[in-house]
Amino acid sequence: MNFIIREYKNEDLDFIVEKHWDIYSTEYGYVKRSFYDYVKKTLEDFLTVTKFEREKIWIAEAEGKPIGAIALIIPDSDKPWEGQLRWFIVEKEYRKYGIGRGLMDKLLEFAEKCEYKHIFLWTASNLGRALSFYNHQGFYETDRFLETEWCDEPIYEIKLEKDI
Image (tube, rainbow, N blue to C red; front, side):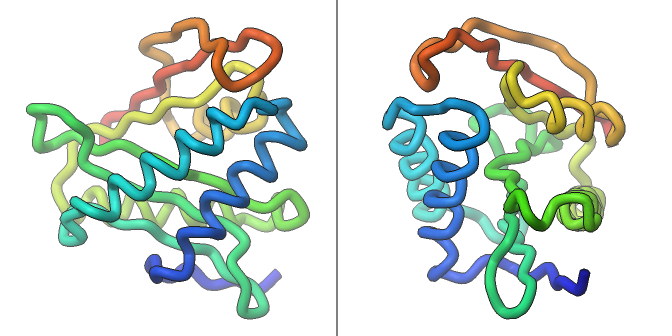
């Protein structure tokens, strides 16, 4: 499978939002529109205030079309050495080709270049493959809370962290 990883372009906004909705609603039961609204608002908010010298979104592309995404952002925190991983997705039919690992490698390489010392992310208890992937990448659980807004079934939102 040939793919490239490139930086975000303005036309990628809809891909990231729509693909999150598509993947999470069909694969994980995120049927409440509040999840879609959450992804769209957080991404739009990020794009209005981003500092691209220390924050980036990358897009995986195959055959000229986007197939995955990942971002490293500066969280609302007083820790300038801390980054947050956001909006990480790979389309189902493109999984198992190393695209997720390629996106993660790009993010970690950039994080080291920008002298981040710590990365965290939020994921959900019903994303078993994602949890396993993050675990293999050296992330560890530090927090969890019950989430009832996005699915009909309660899930836990899980905070994962990694020192780099």
